[in-house]
Structures are given as C-alpha cells and as structure tokens.
Image 1 (cartoon, rainbow, N blue to C red):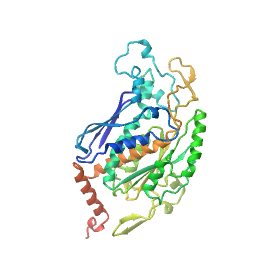
Image 2: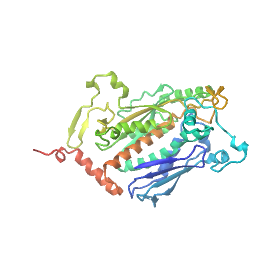
Image 3: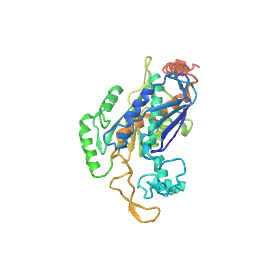
Image 4: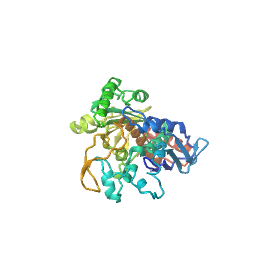
Length: 397
C-alpha cells in the first residue's frame, strides 16, 4: 500500500489517493469521520477548529461499502477557503492589491518558512507555510482510519494517549491496563491523558501559556496489540519495522524524537535488565515475560505489544513572536503571526495513532497475499497458527 496527499492549509480541498488496499474490505466512512473529529478536539486548540468540521468525501475505489481493489480517493473540503479565495486562487490574480494580500516575508523561527523559501525560490513565504502546515495531517488521519479498519478485522488494536504535556507527566501505569480502558480514558479527557488527576493541572498550564502568548509541546504514546510475529525484516536497514515506524512518527509536523519500549532508559541499565526472556506454551506459542523492547526485536515484531512514543516540540507560531529578519529589507523584525494553537499535543496523539496504523498495514500487506480481503484474512490466520507451532517450521533431521 502506498499513498500521497495534496492540498494547502487554506486551499479549497485536501486530498489523498491510497493504492494497494485489498478488494472487498469493509469500508466505514463514519469511522473515518469520527477519527477526523477526534483530531479537531483537545484543550488548547485555536479558532480554526471552530470553522472546520471535517467530513470525508469518497470519490473513487469504494462501492456499496467495500473497496474495489483500485485506488481509493478521499477528500476534505476546507470551509475556511471562502475567506481566502483571492489569496489562494489557482488562477492569475491581476490586481496588485490582491497579489500582495497576506504576503508573508518575515519567517517564523522553528518553522519551514525561511528554508522552504530559499530551497524553492519563493518570494512569498505563504507558498511554503500553506503546505508545511499541520492541516495536512487531516488526510494522514483519514488514511490511518482506513488502516485501523483493516487492522481491527485482523484482530489488531491500536490506541494512543498523551503521557506528558507542558512538562506535566501522567502518573498512571498503563502497562497492565486493557487497551479498551486506555482508549476510553483518553477519549474522555480534554487533553487525551489517561491520568485524570493531572487534567486540571495541564489545563491551567495551557491557559497560563495562552495568556503569555506562548506554546507547549509534549509526549504521546501509541500501543499496538495483536500483531503477528515477523512484520518487518532484519535483512536490510530500510525493512526494519522500528526504523519505518520512527520515520512515520517524525514525519508528523513538529515531532523531534522517538523511542520504543523503555526507550532511552535502556542505555542506563544492564543487558540482563532490558532483554525480554522467552517462554512457550502450546496455547500461546512463544511469548516474552516482559516487554522492555516495545514489541520489536531485530527490526521485526515479536508478538508483544508495540510501544512507541514521540515528542512534539511547541508550535513555532507565537503570539508574542521572536526575532526574525524581513527577507525583503533584511532588517530585524518580529516574526509573522498566523492563526494557531497554544498546544496541539492532544491532536498529535490521534495523528500518531494514525501514522502507526498506516505503517503497520503497509507491513502486513507486504508480508501476506492480499488481492482480496478474504485472501488476506485467511493468510494471516494460517500464519498465526504456524508461528506458534514449532513443529510446523522446524524440520527434524
């Protein structure tokens, strides 16, 4: 499976084309819309979320609630485009006043503005920020919602939540908590945290930060349970599932780091403290007695839950902007201000869940035959039985 997204933050439409989904897969449009709605939630979001009510439109690849096996095309209309039609028009604008409307020439520190302008020879940095905007993640969430539907049909569950926001960490241990409970707690929280006792403290921090014209970052965690053993490969660097998941995570706007399982903490421990011992029962097959490595060994899934965390920097658009330089006059100015959020970490947990689900589906479809969805389900079921029965893959001399 592969995909491409297109569209600008204030353009008319956001679009994606997904290629490689098996034919006959149940396709739930409402589930996609629910995921898009969750992306727009979260304490600390800006006024743009009051304008947009994202709803998916399916224009190709689905008929009567099932995929056809051909490319699937999805789109979301930007309602705010009506306020930007002259600024974002695809046609030539003759009037000088309209040409100069909302031109950006004072780049924001921490954003793509300046470097993108240099790289692509843009005199108006709006040409950069419109595409580099996190509005693009609308389609990443839509793709992830499709991927989640496929995974759920195969018995795989993916959840995400915020474990830290603005330096305030949740204190609830989720390692023994059912995924359904993690999901429920996160969904009920305005900041997508599992630890309800920290919610008010986080909300107060967001309010204080907003008054100061500043922004906040944080850490999100994604857990995927029920995956078959052996997704990914040790044979080449770019086939390792953890490498692919890491790329997917840091491809999200403003994500600056990733860790798996116990993460960077393993560098402070002895090997005997972080390796997950192996056990076996006929009913369960091979399994680990712990999960310090986050469900991945040698670049492959080992059957334990995948645990991956990503850190999101604070949003670079500040209402009390930092120093910048006007690219026209070369004089020092305060950076430009665009409408933005105080924090988007709660939304980032939804996006992270989506990109992880997408990458896992790509790995599943690479491993198993999948012209039709029935073929895929049978192949995965057969492989699960095979992988837990040593007699099926160990030949006696």
